[in-house]
Length: 144
Image: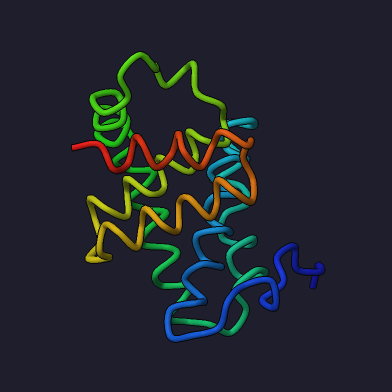
């Protein structure tokens, strides 16, 4: 089995800490799809099982959230376009766009409270984006 990319010790402990790892893994898949269209179909299942081994509840959550993010991409992009004044999706960095799509899917299609999703998206932006990404992601997701 290939070595895992993400290490669980990099994430906080607690009841929902593993969902942070799920979001990181899903962000990585969505980002990869941004750069290499078609890669999601080829690699998503093997990457999920590699990064979330023996965690069936986490795998279930990850598969469902990924399904929501991909099958509802048009509706998600419409939501993002409505909320992002002066920014088209094409102008956004692939990193920020992937984080925003993942977070919007979770807000729209799961029962996760919006403040938790926004906080998790900001953490992804801090880890993977530019210095301006956290504020940008927060501004779009928190826009009413």
